[in-house]
Structure formats: structure tokens, C-alpha cells
Amino acid sequence: MSQPPAMTVATRQALVRQLIEQDPTLSARKIAGQIGVSKDTVLRDLEAIRRADAQAAPEPPAAELDDEPDGDRLILVLDAPLRQALAVLRGIRGRPDTPRENVAAVRAAIRAMADHITEQGRS
Image 1 (cartoon, rainbow, N blue to C red):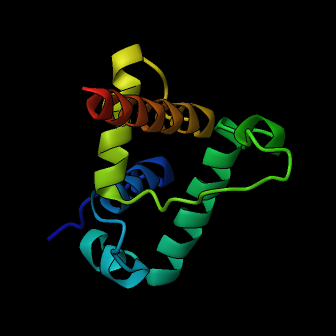
Image 2 (cartoon, rainbow, N blue to C red):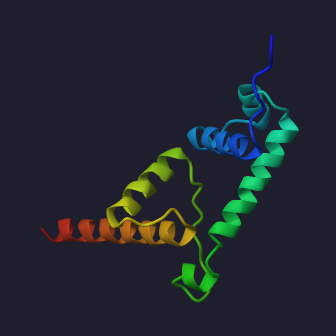
Image 3 (cartoon, helix red, strand yellow):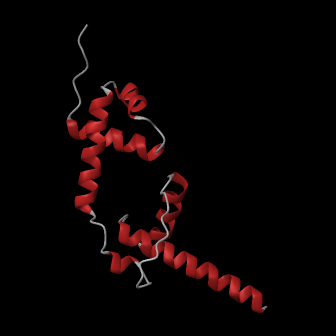
């Protein structure tokens, strides 16, 4: 009985990315079990994915993220439901999934909600 052909690194990393996007709570051990590699291989793949993402979409400078000169920040964990909501907000304008576009989408949504609430209060 022959073994199935080994998947390429790119294919494996794409599969790891897909699994972690579907369920960000998956452990490296569970991912490894699902795709048939070691936990250490998954950890290396996750690090490679993180580096590739950082190079593809560098974090905007703090001055571009903060309205306040003192640098006040609100940090949100991008879990699956929030990622889906951001995708909808970006999709309205056909924007890519980058940190800068996510910040713009969140700001626009917060401002729109505040405007809506203010208008409702005036009615």
C-alpha cells in the first residue's frame, strides 16, 4: 500500500491558516492531528504565517492609528465573529484585510453608531 504524496510547505501552511481562521482557539497539537504532522511543524508554520502577514501588511505607525496625541488605544482581539463583521464593513468599500483598513472600518462603525444614537435622542 503506497503512502499519499506529501503536501508542499505552501499547501500545509495554507491549510494551517484556514484551520486557524475557522477556529482561532485550535491548539497546535489539534491542528497537527488534523493534518498529520507534528506539533512543532505546526508551530513553525504558524510563525512563518505570522512573519509573512507582518511583511505583507506592516503595522501602520502609531500616529496613523491614534487620534489622541497621548496615544490612548483600544485593543480588540480579532476573533472569528469580529473578523466576519470587519469583512462586511470593508466589503462595502471593497477594501483589503489590513490593519489600517480594519482600524478605518472600526472607526467608521463607531462614529456611525454614535451619530445614529445621537439622532435617535433628538427625535
